Image (cartoon, rainbow, N blue to C red; front, top):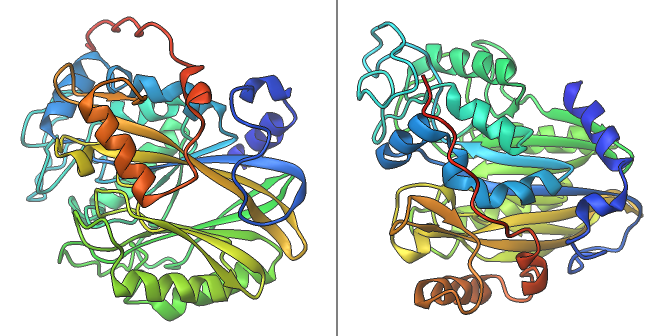
Length: 382
C-alpha cells in the first residue's frame, strides 16, 4: 500500500524532522520501541467564503499556518465533510465541470456540499495522508457522489476510510503497517441527513453498532492497533451526549486504543477509559479544522497529536497532546495558531481548550517554532 510504504520511510527518517515536538507527549499508556506520530484534525467544511478564496488562490492560503505541523506527522488525518463529484448537481443532473469556482450549482456549500478536486490536491499538498468519508454530508450527491469522491481521492493520492462501493462490505478498515506495529482505521457516521443509502456505502455508527464492534474486535484479534473515527454527537455542544459516551465505552471494551470524533463543530473533552487491553484515549470531538463559523467555540479547535508505540498487549497510544488552532475572519478567512498575547480572541480560545482538555497543550515554545513569514499567495487558478 502506498501509505504503508510512506510510513516506513518517515519513521526511518532522522528525528530532526520533528525537532519541535517533545521527545514524549503527555502520557496515556506505557509503551516502548518505535513510535508513530499521528496528527488528526476535524471537519474540512468548505462554506462559500472558504470556497471562493480556496479555488482562486489555493486552500493553503487558508490553512497554511498548520501545514508545517501536518508535515511533521508520520500520518495525518482529516474529515472530508462533503463529496467531490465533478459535474454533479444536488438534484442529480450532470453539467459540464465549471472548474475550480464556486458556481452554486455543481460546487456548492450548505446545506448540500460539493467540492472541486482542487480541494483534495491541496489537502495532499499540505501533507494529509487519509480522509474520513463517513459523515452526515457524505451523500450530498447521492451514491454517484460517493463513487466519484472515492475516485477523486485515489487520483489525488489520498487514502479514505468510512465509505465504499455499492453492495460492498460496510466495514472496510484502512490497514497500515509501520515499525511501531500494524494500525487499522475505522470510520462511521451517525447519519446521512435523511438521504437514502440503498447500497450501504456509508458506515453507520449506531444503526450497525454490532457490525462496528465486531470489526474492531476482528482487527484487534489480527494483532492491529485500532483507531475509530466516528462522526457523532450534538452540534455546537461542548459536552458529549450519552450516546457518545456509551459507544465510546463499548469501543474501548472491544479493544480500540483511541476514538477520535467529529461533527459537533466545537471541541469536546478528552478522557482515558480502561479496557481489557489497557488505557484507551477518547477525543469526543475535534471541532472544525476549517469552516466559516465565526463563534469562538466553532472557530477554535485542537490538532490532535498521538504517539503510538508497542505496549504489553500490542500497539497503544503512549502519549497525546494538542496544538491549538483558530480561524480568523478579520484578515481571512485564515487559520491561525493562537499564542498567549495574541489578543483577546486568541486568549479566549486558549482558555476554552485548556478548560476542556487540561494539561495536554503543546508547550508555547514548541508552538512558536514553525512560525514563519506568511507564504506568498499562489497565482489565481486557471
